[in-house]
Length: 179
Image (cartoon, rainbow, N blue to C red; front, side):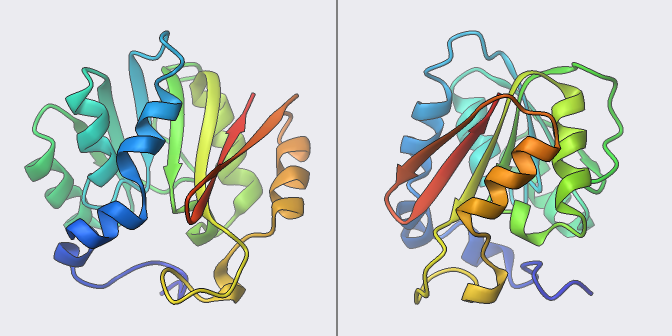
């Protein structure tokens, strides 16, 4: 099993404390400043924490996760969503299907960063967002060796064919917008 993948209890993923630390509402607000977004793919949706908030804002949510238990949880919390078991590196969707694609604290967990970002670009009409941990030692979140450096993300963006990368600081996190 990939040691970077979160595999603890689902309830902890949805705690009010975690939701606050992840600044969920603010992240959603920033992404939805783009009024053209009507559909979103939530890669590594987990229990559907971000998917639920997108759905509450009348966005059609699709989600994938490699863990069947997470998919069941997401379906429970976001009944209007469309969730499937899949890996980020091999998305089961046609090109340009979604207005945007979102990695909510999961890019650092994928097996092949480049392939996952390339796939996200392929299925997105406009942009790809990745919310990630700051590259600092912290009590909350994964250990430093599992976090991604900003320089690495910039290099990935270039290699995956994105023209532009915006870096938006959000409390304890960084929201990357790839165009």
